[in-house]
Length: 135
Figure 1 (cartoon, rainbow, N blue to C red):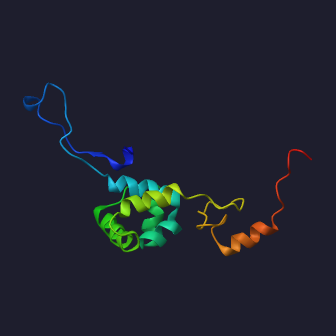
Figure 2: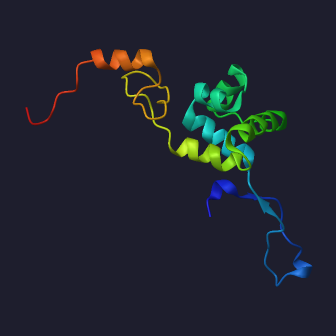
Figure 3: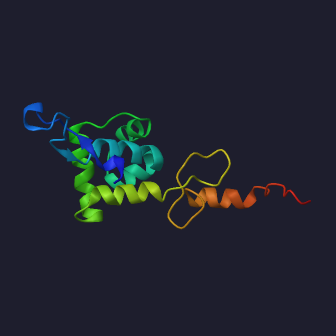
């Protein structure tokens, strides 16, 4: 099981167990998933997917843990895009993300593209290719 999908909420009473602690309830830690996805995707792509304000998306991408209202808002928008399982969709988006190929850019590449924007695609075509080792 993916550890990002587990949130430990408590332990069982020793009176009802065989002496060891038992998990009472485990669920998805949506805040942690959103936080990690924001870090991997970057603020612009997160805003695109969730409809969050730019400042909030930047804060999440910088590592801030989201508040409850932020989670509800992001999940509401993600449900319109992803259907019944917005958390899995967000994880898939974050796992499939890659950085822009233009040197010096920290943006996330668009789907089926090496760059984050059309402008960067054109700029990348003007950049000299890196030297090859066999020449």
